[in-house]
Image 1 (cartoon, one colour):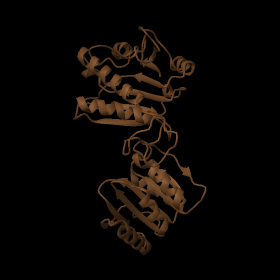
Image 2 (cartoon, rainbow, N blue to C red):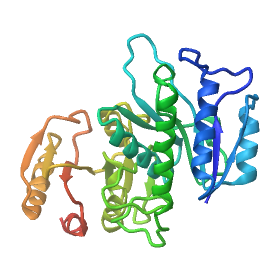
Image 3 (cartoon, rainbow, N blue to C red):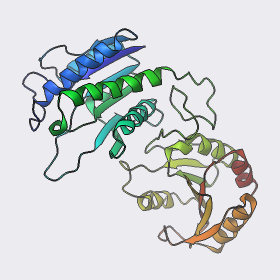
Image 4 (cartoon, rainbow, N blue to C red):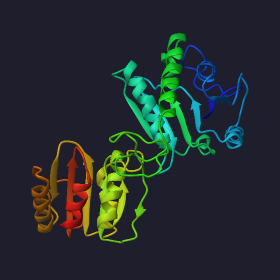
Length: 325
């Protein structure tokens, strides 16, 4: 596995200067430690080994030349006044991407050491994430103000362990509803997510299936393969709320909209039409789930079916029942 580590900033580009050291120095020190931790097991390269300036185009040229399996651009945040510390990872802006798989491996390692840490995994159009790498991440795991020598060593351990874990994953030759998407197959329920894309189904049915959780991706693909329609997903960086996604879908005049998410089993119908209530009753009865009413999404046009299906496991039974109703 080829890994390219990119210490952000360098030379006249200092990054934030709020910490004990300029960010460019923190990034480089972290990169060098991580390089040493990985080089005996992987083919590892650095975009820079010392304090030099590289433009974004320079970095992209290196990525495109090496075509690594993993590209990590290392950065450290600068906080505003009274901003609580949290961790951020940015991924390339794609629907199907193993970048999310590694991102959540990193988050898992982070939370084992810092269980109360808040985190964000966000898609981004950062230039540095546009290169020809299979997995592309820009990490900001810690704020520069937090960083000392010990924390840099610990951050390198977090990244190393996550990379070792992702390297053990096997290639998913046949995608199925029990695997999250991305090159590296993950256990069912893994937190991989996709953002802001529409998948057209050749059946061209009148269903719109909306994901509230990226772990549902292949479940939802299985469902629309049986009932037709389109698959939508709302994400925190694409739509500020479910409401806006619902309004967007309503403009397409779909007659049947089902919102999917994981959680305690439940079926909720929206006050849009008597048909919604009848459908929700049939669905809840077939699945043996509780039934309830929701006042959300009342601005969706009033025709047709609007139902939310919440389930711990959305398996083939659910797809069969939906197709039969």
